[in-house]
Length: 301
Image (cartoon, rainbow, N blue to C red):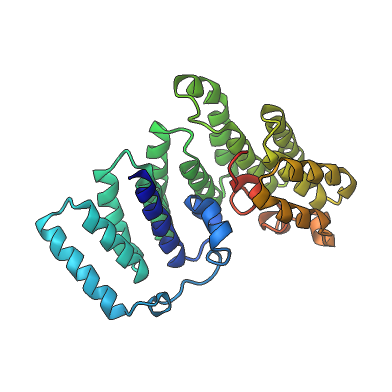
């Protein structure tokens, strides 16, 4: 049952990505699925319904069918999920949000619904509602990386980097105690990597490198902070310092990432990348983003 629900969540998030024009950072639930199976699904304009291989009229008929069932059984999760998927395929984000709200209320233990609802609210411009939804998840699950990344992204959109940094620092401060109560509830390394990215976005490179060093000390077998530091040094024009780190990252990384890391190690930074500017540091090409590079989004070995 858990595998079936997991597949449905993956399909749902992929659909949500198709009907919005955002980066992976706003849809952390995509994770490795997008990178490994859908490399071009994010960052591209939303396709029209006909591009999905289903006629719009057929989708409208399906939506009406689900709505009729929900009139009789308003709490039918199966019908709500079906309606949600159809609304997403139609590009009706508002209609999808209505279904998500009901699903989140009916299944509060499944935080994916609330995170997806927050992302949808964010896309619709209701940032206050999005923040409330993200924080509701973090109240009960402070280490939920989907909610953390979503809220950090929202705060950065609002030009509030210090609030984003404070959120992540507070999460790290309470991680030890929280993990003692509920082991494994906060992935300290992933939070450190996300904090490092925020520092980079603010051109606070020394602090980013420091947090990566702390992450390496915490988990010497995790290739992600090693790779993140290597990329930053490479972009800063310190190729000699970056080279051994790339070698270490290759040795530690799972097989599916080794070739990509080797390729990254051979890249020559452009003049703009070697001397980062505010514009350069906000792009994946200039920094190791937590959700668009294997340095952060890959599972720890």
